Length: 264
Image (cartoon, rainbow, N blue to C red):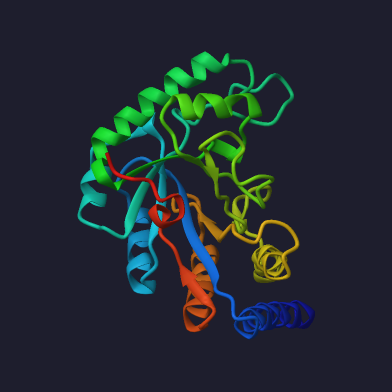
């Protein structure tokens, strides 16, 4: 539709203009990339790897401990542009009836959750070694506030969910850095939300950071799901990364730069 095309063009122009304003302000627009639901080597993981290499952008892969297959650490070990994080434990929901899916909360006790998360962290630390960063990515990007203490007790230094964080430290020594763009349309057959909608998501966070309307220190995060994305989503990600890489305001961070966790 002509109107849709115009809207799309306007969205790209809006993002370009926003980044230009960052340059004029003498600021650097920091970004990072997180991909969820990893468990094994797949064709889709190879596609993620190829895009990361081509764009020269590091990617943090959120791994589900209970589903982990030996092929995944073998694949990642040969590729230092990957960092592994922990994606819950089993990616199972324990929500009360009628509530939204949640693993880190719901009907389980905090002690039960902490026991699983500790086991998962130890498993991934052994499997990935120095490529593992003790950052917890809650399945469905949901976590009850009572669980934050369990994260630090289980040895985590960070947490990452979705949208602008309310606080950089929701609990002592636990740094939260979120993602702000998810191009997958989860409500409609996991299709693409569309270029204009996707760009608006990341533009909203960038603009708020630049004008200091909220937390200006949180880098803008791109979230992908290599197992669930269709060709439209992959194509959009390529276009977005190409555009960001061309702009002098943009700097990509890897997760270790963000959390600055010392290896032990």
